[in-house]
Image 1: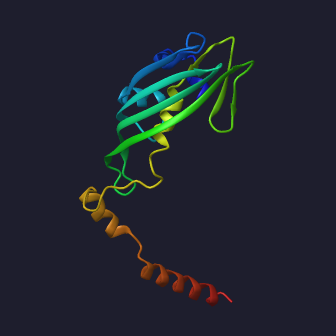
Image 2: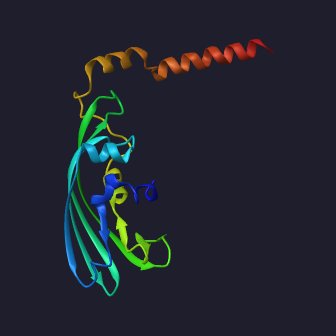
Length: 177
């Protein structure tokens, strides 16, 4: 997915010219809004407002990208499926080098073809946000959609009901012998 974003005009604001960044410290500010998340076309996050501060430092031809992300995203509650706000506050680091061809190494080291001379960080920004979202995300107790909670209560199988179903199934299997 990351490489698909490299040439798209809607992500041109996230292109950083590494040739021009040599021997300098550059700072960038971004706002990842609902349009950004819609453009990225991922199912995990579709709305939000996350501020990004980025400092790019050239250290002898190796570029150190220091990211700070702060804001909120809107995700679906796993229990009731209603939207819920989730805070994002994280930092990340990316090391970028110029080389002959694109490559991803260990420890967040990316090699960018020197003939291109730029990196598009849009997908990295999305990944930094997505990695902050826990696998299970539910509203705080009492905050879920009450109608959905009632529906679930009616249709959830309790462990006692599961045991009864297993006993019936076991009885039916032994009757066939």
